[in-house]
Length: 177
Ligand SMILES: [Zn+2]
Image (cartoon, rainbow, N blue to C red; front, top):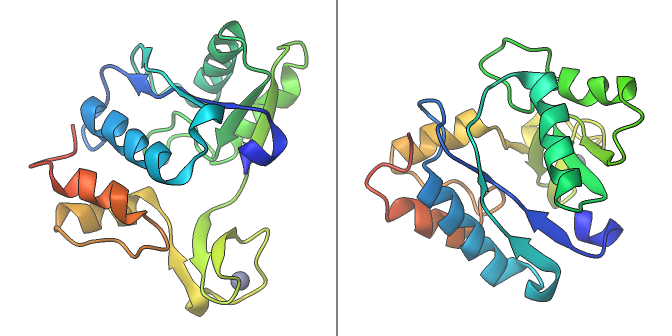
């Protein structure tokens, strides 16, 4: 989606201390490498590690992350639901709404609202904002669902996780922190 709007994409995962249940650093990097190799035009992608720690400060951390990316030369920052959140602590859209209060950031947020799922009728990744069909046609795309499947050694459907990424994860004894 982003590559349709921008010239290039900096994939800039945070590499450093994270909470239990998050993916391990080396797994994150290997998964992105597999994704880029198989699904992205390589000349338009830069994969680079951002060496810092997660603070789980929700909306305030979203602003901090945007400023860091501005300093790396980015023009836009993709912010999703519950960015840098933990459990149910923050309102799910707070990390998106806070950008309205900071118009002088000099980096534009690309807000990805909604909960994502694969819709069998639409035939792609959708959210309740973009798909009119009832939940019976949906394969949920939640991190928790995917985590639970992986913990049980089950392969998530190819509609929600690329098989190349699953191969990376399944080679790890335990992909989680
Ligand atoms: Zn649909």
